[in-house]
Image 1 (tube, rainbow, N blue to C red):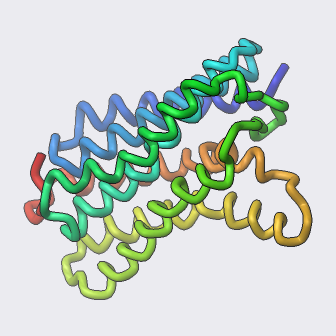
Image 2 (spheres, helix red, strand yellow; image 1 turned 180 degrees about the vertical axis):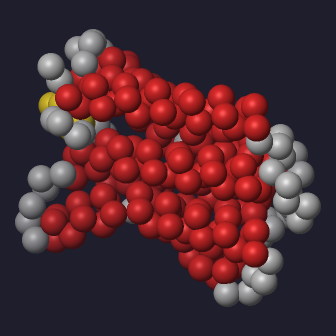
Amino acid sequence: MNWNGTISLLFASIELLLIINLFVFAEKNTFNKYAIAIVTLLFGYQLIEFLLCFAEIQNQFLVYLGFVDISFLPPLNLLIVLSLTGYLNNGWKKYLLFIPPSAFAIYYFFVVDKFVLNKCTVVYASYSYPLGDLFGFFYYLPILTSIVLLIKYLKKQPEKKLKTTSLILLFSSIFISIAPVLAFSLLLFGSDAIITAVESIMCKFAIVYAISVSFAGLINSSNKNERNNT
């Protein structure tokens, strides 16, 4: 039995329940719509990894779909932070955040044959794909930006509910950053042991993020100070 596939299915099931919970119990405001989108993408990736590692569907296009899926997570994470903090009030500008992942999705479509599933281990899958360093830069930059904005926001936010929501997002954003920090630290010491698996490991860590953002969505449902409108 491939335990990575089993864990992926377990996490996908949890994330599906979180999506249903948000649809049923959370107010349909901007923050919660982003929360639903984020958890849905995480669910999609875990389902794809289940198909790759447990069902053993060796399909390069499926690997490509997994990368397209997760490439939209960082800008959505930044958007949910911006919707909470109000740092971005001009609606159309938010779509600029999706240019990098869209560009990668288009480029990668034409080089699908370059995507390779190297192996599946107990907790992660390892991949090879083109432009890994460039992809990593555009992947982690929005996450780092989100952390900085949340720290800045927390320093001046007096309202308890908004402060709690911000702390939840800050904790979960830092938590999912453990994997890339560890991977790049090891790389500095000459070890590339997990660099090819960092996205997969992050998405395993992101079960905590999915739970956190879902909880934040529920406590944010009665928030009357939401600045961003759809």
